[in-house]
Image (tube, rainbow, N blue to C red; front, side, top):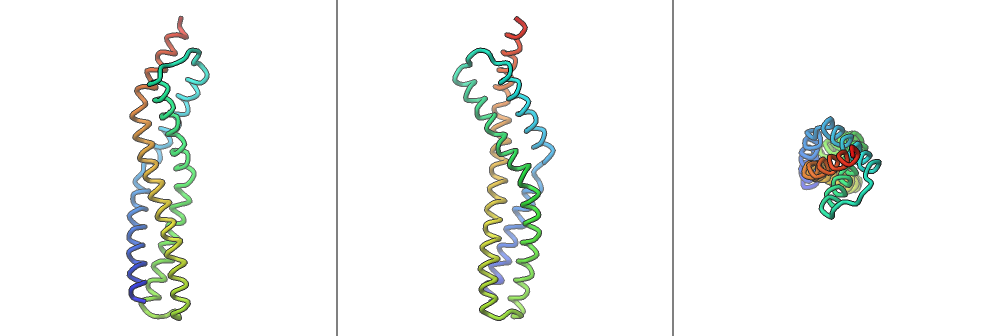
Length: 160
């Protein structure tokens, strides 16, 4: 049972690291970026009367697409953190019980498999969300100048 306890302890460490990364994501910045993208999309969709070149279209499309992951982050972050707190408690309790031998071996193995599987899925979900938010924040930042240029072009044509 010591090997299973060590495995749970390692998984707990990985979950703690993922939780720290998730906590470090600036939710206010994500919200601000999401709102800016949404506003830019609305402006372009309402006011674009002409076609745009291929680079502008691709930049706008990537920029607009990045908001999906920002929205997902806003929707899932609190839930994942809540799941993390529960999983952290479960893993620590089970690890302690395994080390003390206070659970019957068959039950201990059953609990170990269940908790490890659920915690591993949570770890994957947390890391996936972190990766997607990092990518989306980078893409939106990278394509913002092209979208701003497109907006200026639209505004100039509106003045004519």
